[in-house]
Length: 262
Image (cartoon, rainbow, N blue to C red; front, top):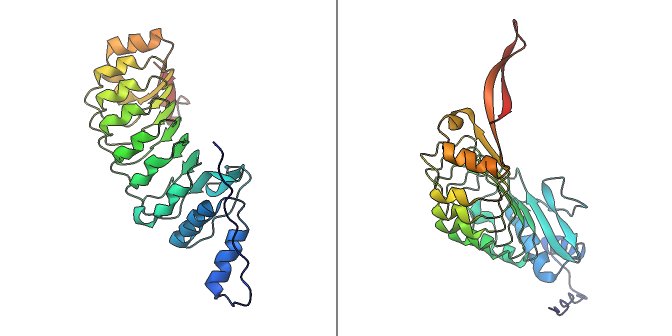
């Protein structure tokens, strides 16, 4: 698809700009992306009260990465971000492939606009104080990596299985009461972290996770893990890891957490 070039801002002559207008035009000029994407970044800056700078790569959790004149990665971590501070214009960052909102435990919820990013492949939402995920989240058909580490989610959307391209999923440290039956439709899922979750049982569809190669649990979960499912996973080459507390160092040693393979 060929996109028409975005119109350039006209040069304003003989008009004195207010100080905040000067700052906005300066920011716009320095961002090599489309006008709508510039507006989205500026709206985010206003909401957060801090400039968002371009990055060459995404090793730092605050900033954005541009490729082919589009914002493709965005990180806003450790900024006390709240749902109502995320402007609607964020939908204009439609070429995003990665978002990192992690360690904003004031976020509490995600806006429904999160489901509009058709190119999204990776989302980091560790310790965001989330209680639920909107149903629209499951529209992210290209999503491959999802970290929901250390949130308070009790139920995943029934349509969670729509995330059929998901490869890596971290649900460590949740209050999940159950996994939806559609969970078994995650046919490309290879890595799954369920550590710290006291699920009463796993859905029958869990047997359909034929691509699963790594499952992480904790010692208490191992005791009640279904034997038939354990044999099934091992037969397909899946390694089951768990953390155990063991005494290390003999006399004068100490208790340490070590990772074992079941």
